[in-house]
Length: 339
Image 1 (cartoon, rainbow, N blue to C red):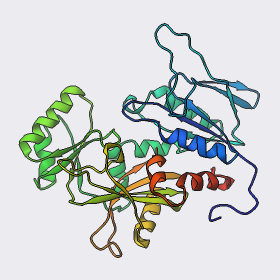
Image 2 (cartoon, rainbow, N blue to C red):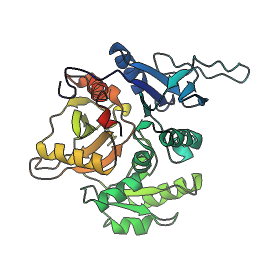
Image 3 (tube, one colour):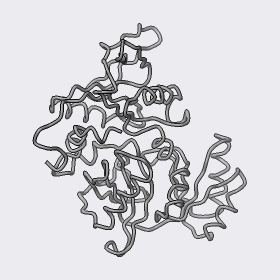
Image 4 (spheres, rainbow, N blue to C red):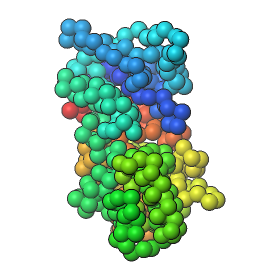
């Protein structure tokens, strides 16, 4: 009732486009598909790999390999014929598109996937989240630039500028070890490394540059904490938040995909307002805002770590009393959110 009036607008259609990756299992797509179907929303889960579209009058037909209840696509092998699912008809006047795994480089998805979504935007479709939003959120250095421009509190972060730039970058952070090293492109904790000394830093940077001469590497101050927070923001509202405890033992990360424990979390008014502000600045309709709470949570801004445009709803769904997925789908009955 917080998101919709008693009289719902006409039902909309939802096209979810994602990619099933062994390193990044497609859990949110099937969850949204199942929940939407139970609500009477006509929803289709498509696989980016192999997908194509064709015009049919004012509509478009989407052709995809079948995707099962676990989010696994039936992609043909070398000797198999390509068998496509029944096409799904879409129109910008009644169809929303949820694109997951949309990257600005081949490291985060084929560029043809991005071009397909640019074409859909040009045809008048609303994509959650937009191309411009994904450009910001899929690059951690771009995230940092936006944070700096808008006075968003974040751990001190510098860019390693070349393969021999480890010492210079360390100097800019005051040579305070341990530090956190991140590659600019990566998700689910992959590409995040604990660095204990300048000697180790040199070795890691040189190794990364040997593997990829165009890699972007970030060096970030380490802020000791027992947990961080994921707040899910939809169009200026918090629809769910959870605490992710740092993994016990030798690890320092708090990614649910790596085994971190999830717990419900009640953000302060200051944390809520800052998460909403950050989502607006990064142009996200549906955002996952990751932050480390300040010592004085009522008076001090949290440390924002990053903004996620492809939000994993499966994790937060498990620990929430009210379904964030239902809140998300219900809110979309309000067509003013679409553009």
